[in-house]
Structures are given as C-alpha cells and as structure tokens.
Image (cartoon, rainbow, N blue to C red; front, side, top):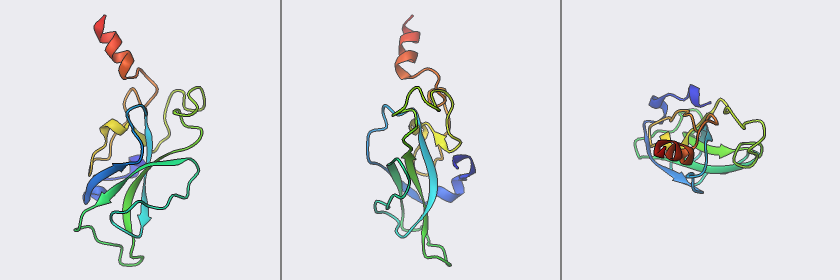
Length: 130
C-alpha cells in the first residue's frame, strides 16, 4: 500500500512511465512489485489495468535472494472511480491510492481533496473565478 511505501525504497527511480494520460484521473493505486528488470514494461497480473510504472537507475540492486527489483506499478481496478463514478469510490479512496499529480520519481505521492472525491480541478477553477 502507498502508506507503507517509504521514499527510501523508491530512491533509485529515474522516471515514471505513464501508459495513458493521468490528467483526468483523480487517483491511481500504487504498489511495490518484485520485477525481473530495472526498466521495461512489467507484466500485469491484476484485474483492471496498468496505468504506469517506475524505471530504476543503474544503482538499483536486485534482491540477493530472488534477483528481482522492487519497482512501483500504478494501476486501477474495474470498480474504481474513473470507470464507476457513482460506485464504491464515489468519495474516498482505496488505501493504496494517491493523486497522480503528486507523484514523481522517488516521491511516493499523497492523497488530495481531488483524489478523495472532493472538488476537481475544474470545480476549483470555477470556484476561484467567483
């Protein structure tokens, strides 16, 4: 879960690769997965879809026991707000979800009013114009 990700665990990230635009997404789920490479697109074995992943720099070392690298993967499930706006997460967010606008290489991200189902960017703009 994102709350369990420590910035020390993601310090070797050099880029976040987005497979689709995150401009309209209120949140993405993130997890640290054990993957065989530092850089390539990982295989995806969850329901839903992969939104993006982290690439690691050359200083990242594999686990001694498994030979794998811990890399972040960003994803959404079929019942998340982007596809089911009136569903389970019409307000609130899953524990591992963060606003994608708060993410950067080596930065774990955070929840925002938008990610929690509060006012979106357009609503904030409209509110500020009044």
